[in-house]
Amino acid sequence: MDGRAPQSVTARIALATAYLDYGWHARGEGYVDTVSDSGWKLLEEPSDKAAEVLKQAWSLLTKCPE
Image (tube, rainbow, N blue to C red):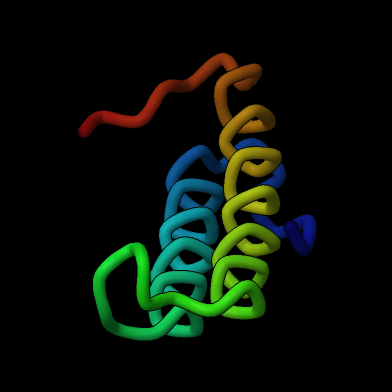
């Protein structure tokens, strides 16, 4: 986060959502058994980043209104 709203839960949730959207796009289309190992890796890395961002959001005093 860039410091303008260091306690913004909404910004963290938006960032985590963007990471997940990117990961699913990078994984590619297809059924589970048709996704390559590199496709799974492309989903795993942004998913891990999203999880970390959401852990940070969970520790904030203000919770997401959604």
